[in-house]
Image 1 (spheres, rainbow, N blue to C red):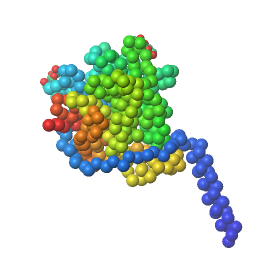
Image 2: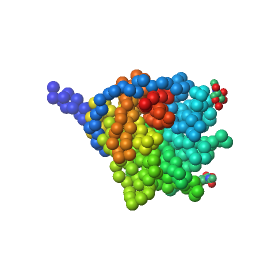
Image 3: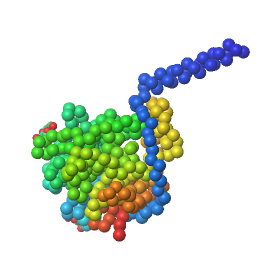
Image 4: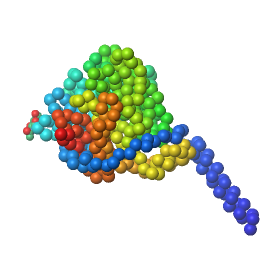
Length: 353
Ligand SMILES: *[C@@H]1O[C@H](CO)[C@@H](O)[C@H](O)[C@H]1NC(C)=O
Ligand SMILES: *[C@@H]1O[C@H](CO)[C@@H](O)[C@H](O)[C@H]1NC(C)=O
């Protein structure tokens, strides 16, 4: 019955056309294929042996920092800055609100500098909270992510994406176009400027021990850049480390001048396929349910220690994430590593020996 076949074919074609039009006009992203690194690590599961600090009290403590007295600070998804005294007692210190508190550091003044992805760069002290930067050159800071302070008072911090906010970070990864920036807040002038732009989800920011360069980690480029602040190379930018076995999140300077980088485990066989195809990503991004599923794909946890010459010297992981899951930061203090995560309810503490 040829006429019937024609109508079925017609219906299929019409549906396909409708889908193509739907995707063309509704996709929130205009993606590029994403090159993925080849590096693989043999699991050692050393992160499974952590002590759990503040268990049950901390909802997604993304970052950790410590002040001169040894008091540990973290920010949680319920909008609190919480702190642990050296004697181990916890205190809910300041309620900032929101759910977007990310990287933080202790300033020379004793205040905290905190990235609120939604609000920008904040200063938090006993007296209250001040917004230091919420825009740069007339454009809003959409996704303040991590921060470090130099001894001259300059504050370097990342704006992970000018296109997608924290809730939509997965779309930035799918789009794979560099929308991020490294910013510098100058406290004397009360002014923020752009240091580097076109970065692929700039996340962790830290300074070298001599403060001669700043390192900024680009999550979905699986690499960190170094930008020279002093010396002959001043103003130049080069790759510090690439082909990382995970997407770098926060980076922290260790006391010996090396760096601890938390690596997000965001890959899976089918995701690797998706990343290769712009069309697949364009379609996927129109389907909120699938995007939601993708956002939940993550496995285990990994941190690496990287020497100042950019070579990995140590890897610690939890390959299936049953203890330490989705570690977002690693900070070394007095012979221990303190591990933050967006998906635990504690901070991991691990002796380094
Ligand atoms: C721990 O130290 C804090 C601040 O110094 C103090 O307020 C608290 O009472 C101490 N807690 C214990 C159990 O010693
Ligand atoms: C700094 O500049 C911002 C506007 O960019 C302003 O809202 C704020 O009051 C200024 N702070 C100080 C201390 O001058």
